[in-house]
Image (tube, rainbow, N blue to C red; front, side, top):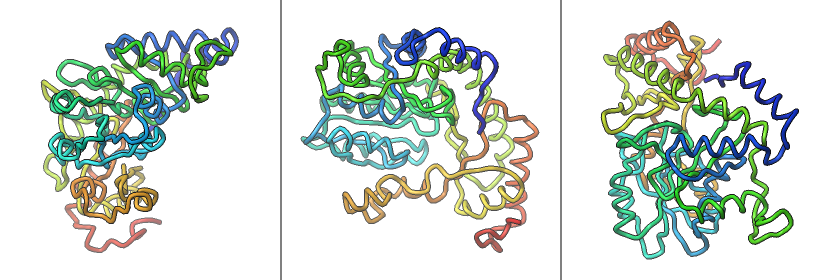
Length: 372
């Protein structure tokens, strides 16, 4: 991918540097207001990262020691780390292999008397099954925190993700569908008390400048980053439409190739293709071949969270506990995806993939065999 930065964003950053407080300046609060309006919630609280947005959201909801948070092992590690940071225990449930997101029926099996929250992840920009997840949460009396860090602008049954659960969390890391030209995050909610607690927690626990109601964190979004985010937000819908068009072209060109394509949208679900992820048993050989042809590709993620070394040490996972998440990690490959990708570039990628399978190149592959 390539971050989208233009002259208007540079000018916004310069204006903020010259005219605003560098911490909690006017652009921060404007960005929060506009992002809340965009998502369709009453409140938005900015943070210095998506990871801190998840952590602070759990704390603002009162999640803590002795609580359990059900989430997916198929995600970036922050989706589970946030529970540990809050003093709670992450409990994993397997994915639906068709959507790569948390399977509500598996989440239901993981509920115990200590479960306090469910944290679905809209992985790769595809919304999780929020209808079933919200039904489960209501039945069991649980909180729902949406990890929308890869899904800015994705829509589920007419509502943007981040507005469906009790709280939504976003990341503005440079690789996301929109960025603040650095790290940044956002918490979205309709609950005024949760928003107030989150705003205090991200600002050292303050209720006033030298009055501290909570043990908080220095987790504020810088004013300059917020100024850039304001401009990026105005571009987001156009960029997402470009991603959908590029995904459609990939889908057409790869329809006859021996790969599993990512889930498509429909009338109920509109993904935003943060990543375009295919699956194949020949993943590593294909990746090596594409790189030898000048095509950058990546694996998101090579290990599911429960098999990361730290989680093996903490919880004793050995592999095999969540077979669908493990299958995804073994077979997934992210192809180039960003709004500026040209049709010719997409065709070049697809022709290289087709050549790989036509020539059955995996049969003579060894690590690095297609490199210089």
